[in-house]
Length: 129
Image 1 (cartoon, rainbow, N blue to C red):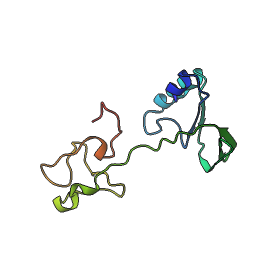
Image 2 (image 1 turned 120 degrees about the vertical axis):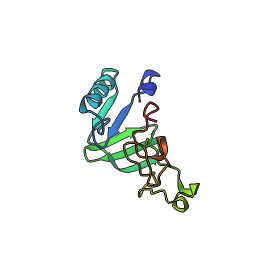
Image 3 (image 1 turned 45 degrees about the vertical axis):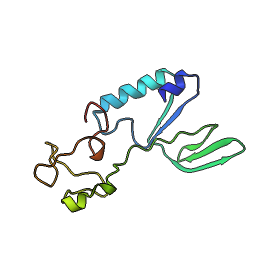
């Protein structure tokens, strides 16, 4: 959002919750304030229930009304790509999203097998992995 805004685009961010809602609330509040200070329209607790495209524009229907835009970027996060690793054969437990289940020490359900990074449901930041 910030990069596009700095390149001159008018940017609106829809967040189902608040920004960085899984982190300390102060982090999300600071980021929201920084975005708004740069002219980014941050709409918290807002999600699109319908998206249509016609005549060169997108129309997003939300619980707060319609938004119109000439471009749409959908950021849905990352999903672990663990399907073809044979984890079931090794006995490594995964959750419903395919993420390897770990404890605080990054141990999996199999002794001596550890997992870290995007294959788990840890926050997906470089410094965490």
